[in-house]
Length: 169
Image: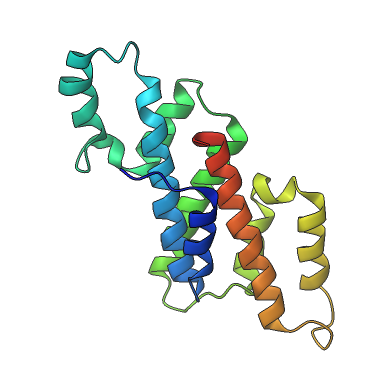
């Protein structure tokens, strides 16, 4: 498993032109971060335990390959703060919603704003969240949808990196 650094994560996210692909990449990056974090949960890391118990649990077809199951385990063991658990769960659910939506959801849509307004990693950064809020409710003759969408994309990218910092960096 390759470990991504912050620059690589930002590059991958920035390369996405629409919300659906962005959320899919963000989901994969967060799942990768969780996979990196999971081995630290297991005691001793004795070679035999790792080989016969831990590796099968963490395998691609193992039970902990599901982001929701892995998150619940980490949170239940008290190894993750509630806000971090909530944010990653929100990302996972919104990604699923965007992927299965019959209508393409954009960065500038109200649904995306509602998603952002529920992310602690964004709302705790008052400067960033206030900029998004003021742009959202401003007259678009001043700000274009593209500019607002770009700000939302940047905010979501920063949210992903801050979540990864809590998990693995």
